[in-house]
Amino acid sequence: MLDILRPRSYDVETVAVTVPQASFVVLDERNVIVEVSPAARAGFGHLLGCDAFDSYPDTRALFLPHYQRARRTQRVVEFVQYYDRYVSHVVVVPDGNRLTVRWERLCMLDVLTLDGLRESLQVALDTLEAAEEILRRAEVRRSLRVVGGTR
Amino acid sequence: MRLDHRFFVLDYDDRIVHVSEEYHETMGRFLGHSVWEYLPGAEKTFRAPFEEARRTGRPVEATLFYAGGLVDLRIVRSGDSLRVEQMRRTNLDFRTLGTLAAGLRRIEEELADRAPEQHDPRALASLRVLP
Image 1 (cartoon, each protein chain N blue to C red):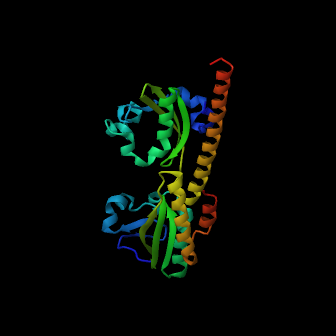
Image 2: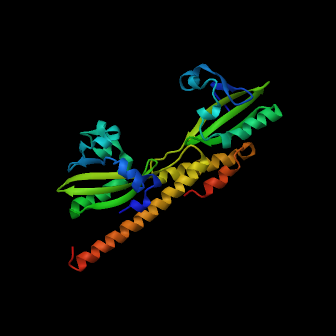
Image 3: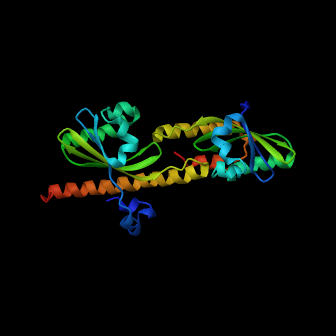
């Protein structure tokens, strides 16, 4: 859905030869990380068995409302979020109170120079705005399908 | 401006010809290389104070943004060489857009306070586009 936001390096030719592995973690009902995908091991492997929000307390306000919504509705929740230099597209798939949280990084800040930071922050803000708009439209379309009985 | 005793020395061609003991671990392998290899992307910002020190022969002090925060520099010419002392003043907190915006405001204030020494005139203008 958010292909339009990917950088040029994700063009079809590139994807044909480099199939990125999905980064995901599985959380139990207490938000403890119970599974980490191979692609996410470098960043999250050491947190296996830990409360995701104890490890990153400042992410609670950013992510928990989406997790709660996924558990409450038992529907897939998608959102885009800036955190620690990256803008990521996050997909939360509920299975009872367990959640599979998948993410893909859409862009990152260049923090070397002020020029680089300015330009990359503008890209990040544009990406957030565009992605939120796409997700909003998709949400409306889903709602229309529900209303029209074609869910 | 109070800087610590860590420093490196550049020749007339911006090559690193000496590093103080504290920098051996991080900079040692760049001895004989251009300083711009050690500080990628910094040339546009750092070159001006380096050139001013070479041109005037006077010590130049500057506070510049590099690698996620503000860096204090003191550059002293000695013959064809430049002795560069540097110390990190602040690091931006990139965790959330809120912490980033707050950090950028602090940096803007610090740069404004040091405006007479500012060698990166585009810096303040750049900050204005940030949230």
